[in-house]
Length: 125
Image (cartoon, rainbow, N blue to C red; front, side, top):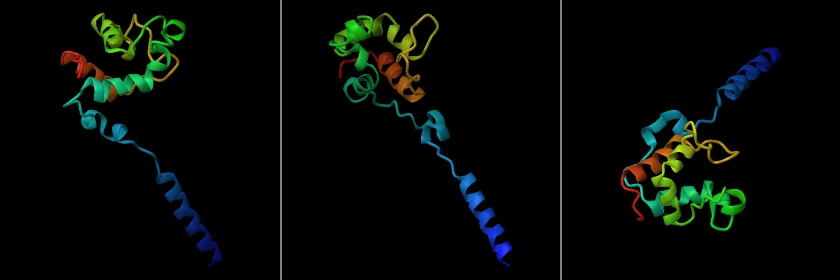
């Protein structure tokens, strides 16, 4: 009887352990959860830049770490938007340096928000 109980517990615990997995909404649902309906510079794009770009591309660090490319001020960002370098770099397009350098590519939804903002005129809002 003890042996049967042991094997039953082993099976139950094994099933419970191996059936657990970590999924985030983007992995489960893909682009369906990416809300790009009201993308703005101040609410969406600027926080992305702060979190992923400004450690190298701030006004203070650009000369040392960011090849002189500044993204902190809207006017500086627009230079990279208008010449296509921003989208080329964040999408890891051929011929552009993959950004963020040394880090993982931004997730698809984050890239989609930036591209949507650009396609909507890259307004300083």
